[in-house]
Image 1 (cartoon, one colour):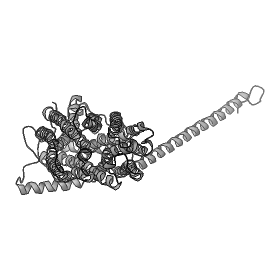
Image 2 (tube, helix red, strand yellow; image 1 turned 30 degrees about the horizontal axis):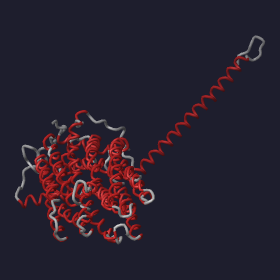
Image 3 (tube, rainbow, N blue to C red; image 1 turned 30 degrees about the vertical axis):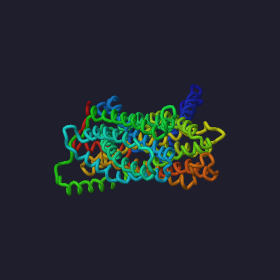
Image 4 (tube, rainbow, N blue to C red; image 1 turned 45 degrees about the vertical axis):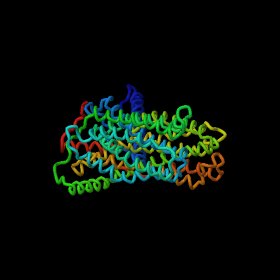
Length: 538
């Protein structure tokens, strides 16, 4: 210890020592605070990781989103042209679903028979859809594997749809049933020839995980336009200023629908190009050989657990929606408006229009959300919101407040808006997963089975809707004098059946395994094996 001139300890040394001790304590406190902050930060990160594990975070394990490369982007005009195919696809589906009610209201056909007319032709789709997918996957032509069928199928579907609704007058219920049944079988064959290759074309237009979602967002956006119009079909066919009766109204409306479908449906075939133009390698092309190869392709496609989960979810969500779309007319007309068909059809048109407009916004939002939180979690969100909308119908559909039929529509729009924006993109990822395993591209087979499930859902909704209507005790001859028990059962079926099916759909997709990370790894392996396949130009 140093001393001053008088021999006493130097106070400055003592002060320095005390300062050093204080600084040491402060440093320890700062280090302790930093350590505590690091501990807290680590706890937060651990909690977040645990939460993502429980929820099923789709980006876990991936350091960041992969940006879409310029060469993987589809020009916007090509997206629009592909979307015109969605317009035609949904126009035909919405038209036949929305116009078939005329067979009951205009001709007095039993609702159960009307339901069968929607369901029976779909049974053949179980064979014709995958068969068309197989044919498209294995076609060799100078125009590609998809485009020739899209072109011819669009024209045939439009022409046959017109003929289907030119119903002769004064015939029996049995005549109309068989006329429409046979005509529907022929129509759906042409519809399949167009729709199956068109769907397959979309799965192959880009290899990018996010660009697929953007493509499906654009096509779904354009494809919603028919649903903006379709709710007014009944009102159009019933309008006495334009048509003598509902039957002549259906005949006139079908002409417009058929011409539009044929004219727009051929555009994807003319202006789009395919990425994969080669069919499978030459093998046994005899009939027996083709049948064996078809059966093998079906077996391989249906062995994909990822694909089956998407199919089940689609069936449940779409089936629930279509059940409502054919059934809610009766609820609005006979519960809200006491049997007034004209006024009920008008307000049903308002609700459908609000729902269709809302779907446009939903598609834009879900497309964005899917690229941020993952396709699967975006599906959970969209389907959950739609469930709230379905349940609200029980409370807001009221004779005391007719405008209440509009309130659930924007929420219900999340159901199909999210479904068809995300499912097409997810199935394109499944096709890559399948190629990695089998060394084969089978977009047509996957697309055909998926859309058969969609059409099966529509058919089931029409069939079950007719049966449920009979179960409620509904009698069209009573007009607005339906019993309270009948009206209550109609309301319960309308609100809660689609809510339950949507809940089951969320459960089905909960364990879907393909994330952005796994899709990126699959693409890398495929391109290392077969090389890159660029996005084609027009």
